[in-house]
Amino acid sequence: MTYSSEQLLPGTQRALLHRIATAQSEGRAPSLVAAVQRQARTVWSGSRSCVDGHAPDNDTQFRIGSLTKTFTAVLVLRLRDEGLLDLDDPLEKHLPGTDVGDVTIHQLLGHSAGLGAEAPAPWWERTPGTLRPELADVLGEQTRMHSPGQRHHYSNPGYTLLGALIEKARGASWAEVLRHEILEPLGMNRTSLHPQAPHAGGWAVHPWADVMLPEPAEDLGLMAPAGQLWSTTDDLLRFATLLAEGDDRVLCADSVEQMREPSAPAEHGDWHSAYGLGLQVVHIGGRTLVGHTGSLPGFLAALWIDVEDDVVAVALTNTTSGLLIGGLAADLVSIVAEAEPRIPEPWRPLPEVDAGLLALTGLWYWGTRPNVLRIASGGGLELAPLQGAGRGARFTAQPDGTWTGLDGYYAGETLRVIRNSDGSVNHLDLGSFVFTREPYDPAAAVPGGVDEGGWRGLGA
Image (cartoon, rainbow, N blue to C red; front, side):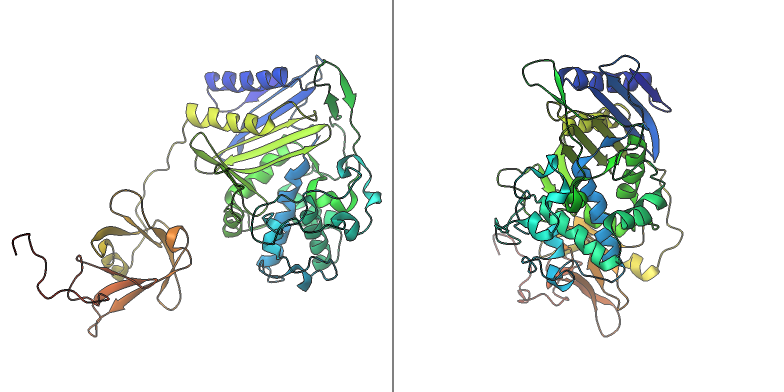
């Protein structure tokens, strides 16, 4: 057993150690390593092993399985940000000849393209990638399980197509692009396609007896963009910082935020999880976590980020099954976030404010419903109901004087300030809804007009 920390309280450290020790013992994992990050700094790490004196550390490689998909998604978003493709483009536009060219890049990223979950037999995770030398070998004969865009259906072959798309756009192998565009800029020197010492070996643990069997570690070939990578907790925490904050060397904050937004309807009956663009989104214990889990024979991995509380947890183990790795990593996040809540940054006034913009703030009525318009800390606008939940959004300014909704009910909608001939404000127009300074203000251009008799009581 090993553990270390820089900032966490002793009680929090013990709770984290107890959680991973319980997971390794009850999950019967040969070894387990985990780490927690806050404010882009590792604040705790710990490990357990069935062999005394051989516990892994933050520099020990484990295979991370489908966590690889998040790296592939970042590479695709980089192509979009450079103007080389649009996420709504059909695959055929950039990668012709696949027989599924009508699906969009967005659908492939979010697993809503309707493609099969796995490559045809034999079991691709335990056999050499040389058995599937062409994309047709990965897709198989039954390429469609569902109509594109209709539902979320996880697809490993879909990420093989995205890997091929990256190679076609860059004129280099997926591995080379990955190294040049993500691993080297982020200093992820211990993330690789193949294991590099020190690394864990993969094991299967018998479900009904305390005995183990070594698992093969095959090169996945064309399936590599879906699950090939080996990494460490140190490297994955570096990657998590990118996913939480963005990094202009790799992917800007706006694009990272787009990755974290659900991209397709959740599976029927599962209202606690969704899938963004290469990222899973889960709601556990009242908090929202984004990240990814991964598994390949002999290995399980999980990375979860609580953006609001600024806590990241990574957990890696070398067993095929038996340990609920996603739940473990989620618990590590919760332990820290609940025991040591994030300390808010000090409130500070804006450096300057436009007087005209300030004049727009305050109460606005949609019919009789009061809403409040505020200036956001970044200089945008925020509209929200005065009380309770309801329609609202953040808005960003456009060069023509309008405002575009960033989220919520009004995402993508246009907010306009409608003025009288003398320049005074008559009302706000938001996607055709009229917001006035008084409920059904007779001086404003309320659709349908306002009764001339005005407001009245029961006896009027």
